[in-house]
Amino acid sequence: METAIALRRAGTHGQLACLLLPPLLTLLILFVAPISLMAVYGFWAIDENYLIQPSLQLTQYEKIAGDPLYLGTLASSAGMALLTTIGSLALALPLAYYIVRFVSPRWRVLLVLALIVPGWVSVLIRTYSWNLVIGEAGLMNWLLMSAGVIDEPIKLLFTKTSVIIGLIYIYLPYMLVPIYASIERLDNSVLEAAENLGADPFRRFIYVTLPLIAPGIVAGCVITFIPAVGEYVVPNMLGGLKGMMYGNLITTAFSNFDWPFGAALSMVLLASILACLLIVGRFLDVNRSMLGHE
Amino acid sequence: MTRWVLGTFTLLVYAMVYLPIALVVITSFNQDTITTLPIEHLDTRWYAELFQDTKTLQSLWTSLQVGIVSTTVATMLGLLSALAIVRHDFRGKSLFMLLTVMPMLAPGIIMGVSLLLFARYIGFQTGFVAVLLGHVLLSLPYCTFILISSLARFDRSLEEAARGLGAGELSVLWRVTLPGIMPGIIGAALFAFTISIGEFVVSFFLTSAGTTTLPIRIYSIVKVGITPEINAVSTLILVATLLLSATALSLTWSKRN
Image (cartoon, rainbow over all chains, first blue to last red; front, side, top):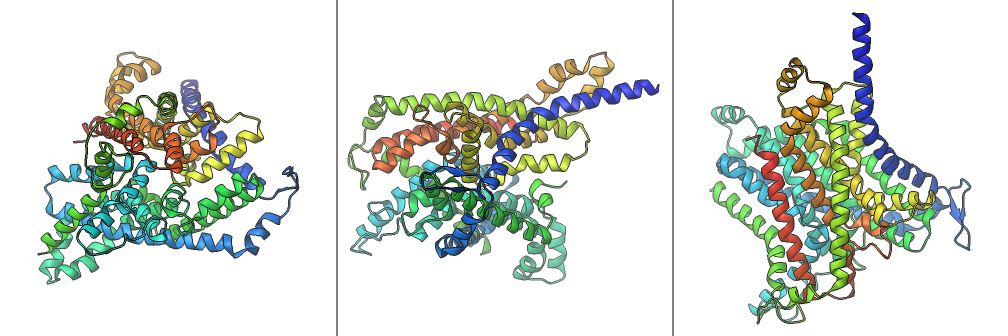
């Protein structure tokens, strides 16, 4: 009997090892090892012949701390990501609320999908498509000039504003999904109880709905803000010099073959993202709100 | 009152989401060389030019190859992870799940750059295989989580029944479990393929001169100057993505509803 149990246990252990090893090794080799190596690279230096000097030193980090360009760009990227987060929240919240409250369950899923599915089209194409809307010869200027509102085309492209518009467009689905899910889970009887007790729609929203959907809102904000800070494609295609973000600095360092410096810049970004996650995680159980009920 | 205000707002957001995409499609039929409005003549000239452009066609072929192989690998790895997570309790399970989600959260640029450093450090050539491995890493989290949810919804009593009738573990997996979650597997694969076909940043750091994927080709054309040919390529990718994701969705959602 005991041997049977032991055999069975050895069997499930062997089974588990077979299941776990391939994906675990993949993640270790393709994710953990490269990022660990990059952490080490950040403490190395290159000499005047662009040869790597593998000796531990803080030169790269001193360089980052010494020039306001680097941390300044990080701060402005964070600011742009914050505006993106607020913008997509402002779009997603009323929209999700409308769909849950006023659309029949049959159509709800289709309406939400209609917003998510375009999000699977290549980021490159969706970003580029805004050229056709806000570019100098784009739809917006054409409409405004034909209507006689303006005489000269508005130069919106290649500014911070155009980058933020692009970012909101790209990240809207990220914000929408957790918010929609949390509003849909909302228990209607709670709202009815509030109504019976005399709360008007505004008070019901502020005091009942908002606290109940807060985890969804936080999850949406986190998964919008984090990738937006490190975004590279959108600022590169819509930003020009004025709308540069931190990702552009990293790429520049790498295209100048200054790998230790690029690595240090990347580590600063990664550390800032982790810090944000820890701060948010202190206030809310992110795992829970992101991965559903469990 | 609230209903109409919110409804109008919702309509505007939909317009914002579809307007740029619609413009890409419309301008792809513009006969003129410069993409300006208003459009005077419509024809399929740019599609004809596209099919003459060997560089773009070559990059499409590369993208398809990378997509098919990375999708197969990522789906299989995702299935293994999902089986381990749903069917077993083990020490470090939540750590393993965290590790699985992380590539989804880390900025693409960090993954691209660190993979480049790592490849060069161990003396691995960038190019086709490197791009492919990058795509496996990016789609693995999505495959894993789609398959976790299909496995969690799968009725395990069917497996018990098969075991009761004398089927071995592998036979249960092959004949009962896998057919049972097939819609989820196909859905995960289509999702991975969609990611691979559209992916840009990671590929950007891992390509070599010989392996240009379609998004990288598009990027290089856009950087030189926008031609309506780009709108034609984009329209084709758009249609393909929408079809793929619609299929993926109908397969993964059919059981739930």
